[in-house]
Length: 112
Length: 114
Image (cartoon, rainbow over all chains, first blue to last red; front, top):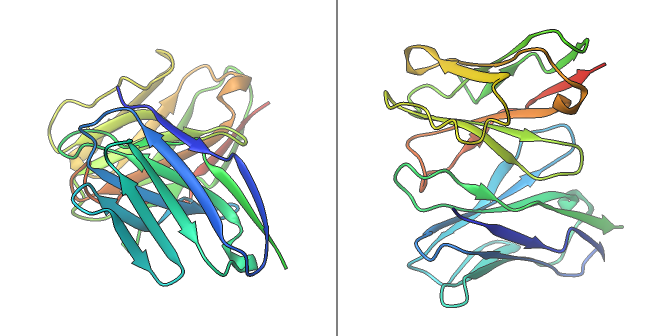
């Protein structure tokens, strides 16, 4: 089955800095890669996703890149703000009846 | 409804008792997932329902865990004879189909077994 590795487990940055979270996946058939943000006491919420037919996607301060050859994808957050502090999860799935596999999460702390 | 609703939000139970956790998915979503999140850990897949197909139970950790989805809508996760290691946040998610569709999560049920 699919295996998703996520690094780092904890990331501490100063407000205004950039943050990068990286994930690798094992199944080359995976074609959908969402990123979720989980704030304390809440369920994860989708913040951005990318499909295998594109290499990069941006939405304001966040962007995701995908390297299908290397089977890795990354989340980039620019100009970080304290409200970006949360746990971020990456996931990979193959579409159809395949269940998304999640990484173990990255705790991002943005210091004001 | 506006989103995925889970109840109760918190549950404290004594070791050995049975518990039922409820999930109301978004109307029209055919796929429903249960995940478990232990303290500081990632999302552990438990069970998946898709339309009228037989559920994928491959993630259930033991035969004390079971789930059903009635009428293709509400789902109940049952844990029998609870153990302390069952303490975790149980998350439910639903999506229009599966795989390539966005999964919407509920706020979770925090289960504490004492």
